Every structure is written in C-alpha cells, then in structure tokens.
Image (tube, rainbow, N blue to C red; front, side):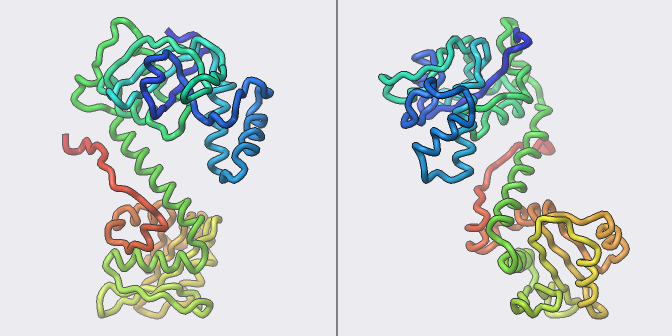
Amino acid sequence: MKNAFSRTWGIHAQNDFVFLNESVIAIGWEELGDLSTLPKTKDAIKNKYQVVFPTAKKMNVANCVGSISRFVIDMQVGDYIVFPSKHNREINLGVIESDYYFDPNAKMYNHRRKVKWLKHLPRTAFSQGALYEVGAFTTCFEIKNYTDEFLQALDKDFKTQKAESSIDETIERTAADIQNNTCDFILKELSRKQKGYDLEDFVADLLRAMGYRATVSPKGGDGGVDITAYKDELPPRILVQVKSQDGDIKEATIQSLKGAMKEGDYGLFVTLSNYTANALKYLESTPIIRGINGEELANLILKYYDKLPDRCKKIVPLSAVYIPDIKTE
C-alpha cells in the first residue's frame, strides 16, 4: 500500500479526542504563532523558538524544535500517521491530507494538518517492538524500524496474528533496548554530575550496596588508590581506582594502580568509558586486577539500585518498571 515516496510518522497527544473527532493531527507551542510565515528551514524554527522561549535549556530546545520542524516541514501530504490513543488503548492509522496550517480559533493544538483516519486497531494487533517504537517520548517522530508492520495492518485481509502467536519474537529485543537505553542514561548522568572526586564517593556507595566495607581515600593524597574495600573483617584488601574521564583507559594508568598494591592485595579499576586494546591485554595477564567499564558499571548500578543510598538515587533517578521475560514462557 505504501508508495516509494511516502514516510510513516508517529505522534502523541494529551487529548485524543481532538485528533479523532476533528480528523486532524496537531501539536502545541501555540505561543510560536503561524509558522507558515517563516522560511521552511529548521534553523528558522529554532531561531523563532529561542526568541519566544529565551530561558529554555539547550536540550529542551533541540527536542522541541525537532518535533516542530518534523511536523511543519518534513511531513508531506500522502505520508502515513500512527497515533496511539490513550483513552481506548488503540493504534490509529491514517494518511495526511493537508499541508501544515495554523488555526487561530482552535482551543488547543493550533498547529495542524488534516488527516483521514483509515483504521483503528487494538494494541494487541502489533508486536511488542512496534509498540515500543511508537511509544517514543518525542511528540512527533518518524517511524523507521516497524513501518512495514504498521502499513500491513491497513490491508483489508489483515488479521491480528501477532496476538495469536505464543511468543512475540520482538519482546526479547524490546526488553534489551529498554535495558540499553537505561544504561546509557545512567552513564550520561554520572558523566554530567559525578566528575572527579564525586564519582569516587558514588562508587564507594555502590560497593557498600554490594556488601563491601569501603573507605574513600583523602582527596589529593591517595597515592593512586581512591577507595580501599574489604569483603569482611579479614583480608584480602581491595584497592580501587576510579576514573571519570571520557577517553579509554591506557595500560600505564592501570599499572599505576598495580604499583600501589602490596602482596596479597587485589585491585579494582572502575571507569565510565572503556579500555584500550593494550590495557585489556594487561588486565587479562594480571588476574589480581579487575577492570570494570562503563557498561558493566551501569549494570551493577541497576542490579543494586534498591540498596543504594538516597543521595545516589537523586543523582541517577530511576523508576522500577516490569518488562516481559520470555524465559518464563
């Protein structure tokens, strides 16, 4: 059903009924006024946005301008739209029938496009991966990975075979995506908020949550050791070095930790980034030192998150969610 030039878009709204009852898709940001008077460029919209919202943060500007420019500029007549409505938990499929226009008389969502709704299907008609993609946090976005699945649903002989399948093959991939996105968020927050000595305190709290006794070394006088940890009252002693730098850790840096170790000690090197090839070879040949990279650190934080002190949870705020586990099928 899709032609060679059409694209498929997803959109979200707080008020489902405006979209469904008025046969439109629309976005807010009414303060911007009629955007059809601007040059059809993302930069023009960005400049307008920054004038109207001068105190907006850089990340907020990027996200909002992206959604607005996709709606105003990138969408075309004949493109398809996927709209998940909240009040009835349906996936609504339609085709865009008009260019962008500004409706000054609308009570909300003044930036609009006319749409012909073609089909309204339950969420169970689609794979978990497709639902995950259309559940993006962005207001207006292009659907890329599951376009074919949504458009196949427009065929008249389409059946909800996804709901009849015993195992949805996309569930495992979707769960992995959620885990990966969460790990990315953890590392970004740590990199942004926990530079230098602050990360040492966070890692010490994580070690305590894991059951270790951990003492942070005095600032500036650690001799290559940031944290000293014990599993219990007896040896071995674990000497920990923590690095918050963005670049990969080199072999020489790990060797500095080895130089601070005495006979019977074990070493632990923790970084938000990763290790160079030579550093990995050194770790492999030095089993008394364990290296933890950013991905491993994020996974440990997820595993022991409930046991972390509140100060750590404020730095990396997470909410518990349940995701499908196909191993139980």
